[in-house]
Structures are given as structure tokens and as C-alpha cells.
Length: 273
Image (cartoon, rainbow, N blue to C red; front, top):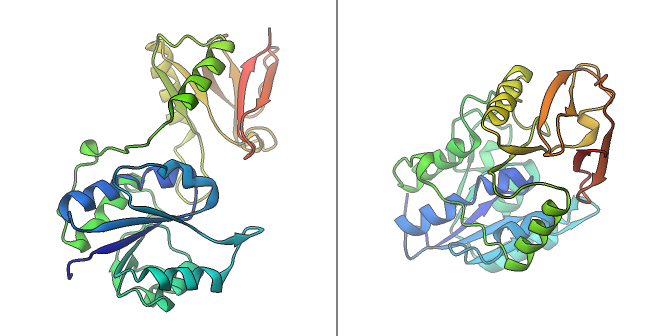
């Protein structure tokens, strides 16, 4: 493919997916040093790319009440005159926007009914979960002439302000969590965009963490735990926020106290004293 000077990476879905797309910018910059890299994101994920050393500019998808404002976005995309876009998360409206904006090289999945809107197609199915999401993302770079990259060698380069770091440290210490030990955050389940890890695998991960005396959180939407009898539900092992899984509703006498963690309805749960 002809050398690109302005590449737009499109990732308009969730926080974790955006994080797993961040390494693309550094790899592109390293292999194509004259290229400017832009990210198209949703409003609530833009801070993940704040001050990123390998991203030249962030574009925020213009939405109103969760719906794309089509012509407003189209106008902005045309003004930037991108010569290539890497659509890591495709939807019909996004694909149509990029097509109508006149971007010459539109790289995206070849397995969607609207894939004709992409003229550089990637033929890999993500829905079966045969690879890690990061590996799928890295494989898309081959169409830019970038050789295959080992996922173990990538860096995410997320920039965190010192004020935010200190705020989180104080919050964790207030909850009685020792910062002298490593902390693992486990996120069971997904929003349906990928195959979930089986329950028995989450049990294995839990045991590995507890055996190594690593403090870790279970991080997820509360509704995924509580109402459905086939979903796992957690119960607390100790004040250090160690968790195990049980199938179905927890019958433990230990009470679970939940404090709202973010506006997106994720929860941080701990045992009540």
C-alpha cells in the first residue's frame, strides 16, 4: 500500500478495547516516522489517549443521546483529509462516514455485510475468540506493510497525572488495601463483543492470585452477577479484597457491601465490617 502520511485509527467502543488499540500508534510511528496518527474515540474514552506520546490528535465522535450525528461528523472528517484509516471497531454508520469522507485507504473487516465500504480488507473473524484482541489489532498493521509484531513487545503508554495517581492510592489505602503487594484487576465477562472466558478458567485465575497472595478486584457490572442463575456471583474471602467464584447466587452469610465506583455502574465491592 502507498505510504500514508495521515492515519486515523477508529475505535468507538469500550474502554478495554481502546486500551488494546493504543499500541498501534507507536508501532505505526516507529515504522512510518513521517506519519501523523489520529484517534477517533467516543467522549467517555478520550482521556485514555490524553497526552499520548505517539498520538498527534484525538477526534471525539459527535453524538447526541448515544446516536451519531452523521453530517456533523462527516464535515469534520472531510476537513482533516486523511489518506488512510484503520477501522479496528467497524459499524455500518462508521464505515459509511469514512467512505463518504473520501479517505483513500479504508482498512477494515472483510466479514461484514457492509465490507464493500472498505477497500483494504482484513479477513479474520474476531467473534470466535481464537486470538487475544490485541493480536487481532496488531495483525491489521500488516496491510500497511508493517511486519508482524510480538504482543509481548508492545507498550500502551497511557499517561496518568500524578494527582490522579495519588487520589487512587489514598482511596485504596482507605479501604484497607495494602499497596506493598501487586494488585490484579479481573474483569469477568464482556458486553457481548467477544467470547467470554469459561467460569472454570476464572476459578483457576482466582486460585493463582490467592496462592501468590496477590490482592485483586473483581470488576464488572453488578447486573451480570446478581439476577441470572447461570451467571457466576462473587463472595468475599477477606478484608484484603480477595475473591472466589461460586456458580449461581452466593449463600454465604458474609454480607457484601457495594459502593458505586463509576458513573458507568461498575462497582467496587468489599466485605462489611
